Length: 514
Image (tube, rainbow, N blue to C red; front, top):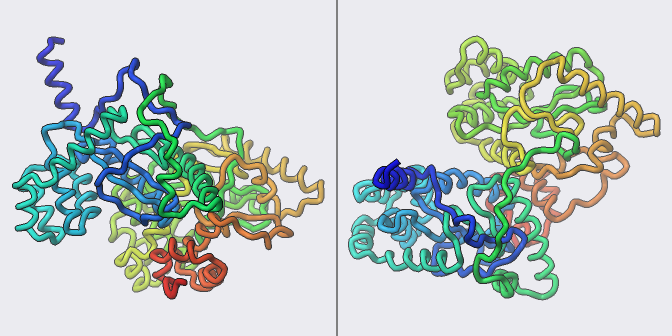
């Protein structure tokens, strides 16, 4: 390959966002366990100024990986409502093309940063002057002021300041994140973000208990941090569920369970209606239920993949079916429809819903106003936080099985769990408590709704941890369960009420907040 061709290929890769330059092997990197003192600069900030978690993000609108990780960041915000402040800093891969970054800052000046931010990532920052003006017009900006800002290069110095800080720190690629100073390099999975964030949340809460004011948290937590990349360690990459471990996995949304509450084996499956492997897996699970009607219960959890165009709406339709007490009729009808005809467009979802006997005005209304969108997103976020990255992923009494499996493969696994449960019952454990007992030594916990995670009946009165109460209250509000939400709200601290105000406004619990 000659030198000219190499330069051209590298340039194309940079502009397309499929290659992100990283430090050479000899260059220092950031130690994952260390804390770094990262300046906030004058960059846009979103989230509460007194949030216990500050994420500084070095990113580029033209970077494909930066675009991809935005879904992960939205899931993070869903799991930890109002606990995160994000500082959006720019590191252009093409230092001569700062138009997208400048357009975002010009929108920020008019109070529309996040809207422009999201639109630019949808386009992967590949915009020209006409594009940014059309975006500005579409989101309602004052075009005269916007054009003047771009013409005069008003925010170019801000972009250069971000770039200078990144280079001084040793940041050489995008995206790069620092969570209260702890580094995460690249478009990492949600599971990796959650691990660092929850450790930092504990550190932040300890600092507050020791007397640090919330407004001073970031400064205090990073005061002794390192000033520059200084590690020779390569970035740790990759995570797989441990097939020999047990994970705490809840019973999902109302109506999504098939089988008796005292079944000795619980199979929770994270699935996607548009996934062909999930279509293949559904009859296998149905056969297990039929073969062992008293011993097995099946739980459906939602994990619609971003690359499946209709999967999220289908999941929302299924949640509405569950709300009407007909989840499994809709579930079975939709998978049968997919096998026979292959599509799940809005008209096809309505046809399946009609056949399943749903009340169609309520069904259409739920899809029109996206009533169950956040419930589906939270279910998916909980799965991703556990480390699930493919569908179907099943948990058989908490033990993961990834991928579509035949009946002959699953049946002995289920039988082994039945035998283990029967052995446990000989120790005086009741059948209704088997699943809770099986989860007692779990490697990780479900971050969706703690109320959907079974506990031993004699322990049902135990108080929820603060973070569990946040998850439980958010889940009740998302599923529009006013009774459960009101009960949880009454025992929730003013701090957590403020964190959940936006989520719980849908059921009328946002005010008054002390």
